Structure formats: C-alpha cells, structure tokens
Amino acid sequence: MRKTGLKGAALISAFLLSACQTTHVAETSKADIKEVINSSEATLVDVRIPEQYAEGTAKNAINIPLSTIQNNLKSLKGKKVVVFCNKGVQADQAVEILKKNGVEVYDGTSWKNVKAIQDEASNK
Image (cartoon, rainbow, N blue to C red; front, side, top):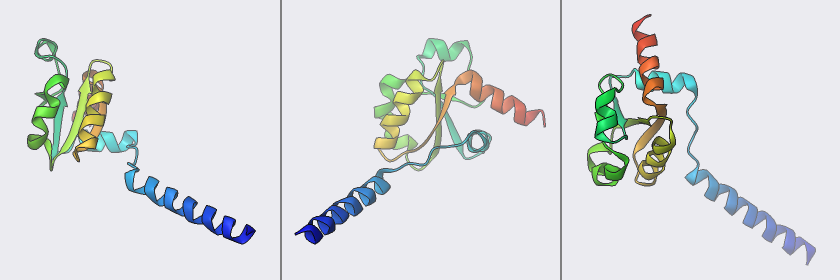
C-alpha cells in the first residue's frame, strides 16, 4: 500500500508542477525593461486618465486609461506593450488584465521611470 501512496503522491506532484509551469510568466529584469522601453517595437501605454496624461508622459506614449483597457485588447494583441501610470498601482492592474488576455505586457511602473529610461538611452 505504501508504494501505491508514494506513486500517487509523485503523480500528483508532477501534475501540479507541470500545471504551474504553463501559467508561469518570467519576471522582467531592470535591464530587460530598459531594452523593451527603448525598442522601436514597444507600444508605450500610459493608463492614467487623460487629464494626467496631458500634464506629462513618456515620449511616444499613447493614452489608454485603465478603465478602458479591456476595450482596447484587440489593438494591443501582437505587440510588446509597456504600461505605466503615476506610481505603478494602475499599471499593475493593467498588467494583470493584459496578461490574462494574452497580451505581451511589461510593467514600466511610472511615467517618470519610463521617461528616465528613455532619457538615459538618448544621453548615451
């Protein structure tokens, strides 16, 4: 009986580990996010409200407020999307929504962070 129990436990463990692997999304390092932000292929999305976006944002960023991100999935699929806001809270929410819908998304945290990465690259 003990052998059967161990085989069952091993089988369950293998199943759980493989299930985790299919949903695992690699974390992006700081070096990688810099590369993505400065890539011509990246779509930079400021998820703040239009009034905040108008006050300042990163270069070449488009404004898709968090409240409308679900309605814009079609236009974002197939692109490398970097989302950001003021402090990263709305960006985190946008990342979750986009990931769940199959969009390749990166968390740029804040617009000031993204802008600083762009400025650093242009000063090299």
